[in-house]
Image (cartoon, rainbow, N blue to C red):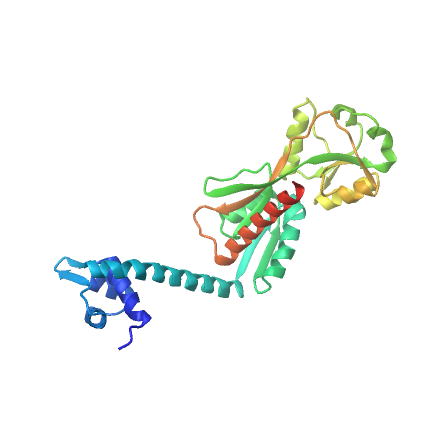
Length: 304
C-alpha cells in the first residue's frame, strides 16, 4: 500500500484535535473511517503513532517525530492552496473604491490605470464624491475602500491610514504678474475675485478655517464643482484660486498661471486610505490596497 497525501492529512487533523471523532467531523467523514486510515498508516510505517484512551489520543515518540515533519509540509501545502485560490479570484474578482475630488486627481487615477494593467480580469467600480460622502459609502458598506483628502471626520468604526502629503498654493492668471514679484499677505488678496470648491466640501471648510486664523472671512465669488473647473477659470482671469500644487504644475510651467507668494503658510494636507474595521477586505480589494501602498512607496523612493 502506498501512503498518499490523504493519510498524512488525516494524521495532521487527528493530532491537531487530539480526537478521531473531532477530526472526522472537521473532515466531513466518520470515526470508523478515520480509525481505519490511521490503523493502516501505523501498519505501513511499522510503529505506533497514537496512545488511545477515553480522553482522546496522544502521540507516541514516533508519532511526535512524524508530526513535526507533517505539520511543516501540510502548512506549506495549505499556504500554496490559499495562494492559488487567491490568484484564481484575481482573474475574475471585483473591487469598489470611492475617491474624493482631490484624491482622485492626485493619486487614484494613475493607480487605477496601473492596477487595471496588472489585473485586467478584475472589475473596478470607481465613484467620485465629496470627502464626507465618500467616507459614508465605506461606513454603509457600499464600497471596499475610500481615498480622501484631509480634513476628514473618520468614525470609530473605520480605519484611516495616511498615504501622502500635499501642498495647496494660491494661483492667479499670468495677467497679474505684479502679484508675484514680492511676498504678499492674504489680506491684500481680499479685493480679488476668489474661486474655490463649494460649501459642503472639506476643502471649503479647510480654507474657511485658514482665513479665520488671520481674522479674515472666506467669501468666494465662484464656487466650482471640481478642482479641474478651477484651473481654466483662473487661466481666463475670472479670479484667484487655490489648487494642490501637483494639479496646477503643467499650467505653472507653461506660464498660464502664476503662484502667489503668500506670506501666510498654507498648512499641508494628506491623502488617506479609509476602510472598515469590521468587514474583512476581499482578496481583490486587499490586492488594490497593497497596490496603492506599493505605488506610494515607489513614489517616495523616486523623490529621495
